[in-house]
Amino acid sequence: MVSNDYLGFTQHPKVKEAAIAGIEKYGSGAEPLLLLVATMIFHAELEMKIARFFKRDDSITFTM
Image (cartoon, rainbow, N blue to C red; front, top):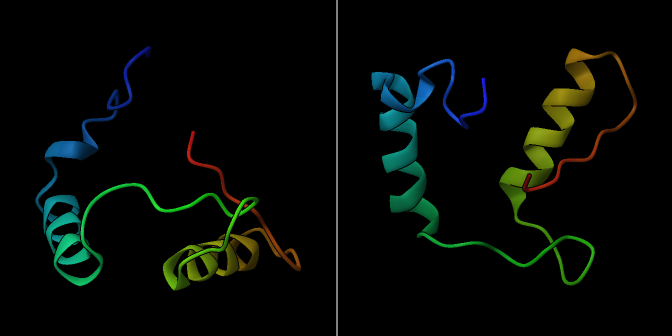
């Protein structure tokens, strides 16, 4: 349980497809940190989905 992939999701076909689609749409590389510059729309969408899942008004995500 010390790996970033201890559940094996990196090899799941749907995860691979989503990664490819994301790279094709947004490119590769790290984006600026929210606290320093801004965020991209998919960050905001992810945070909204997480908040909705946990029945909260808002959430915040971090890179690690």
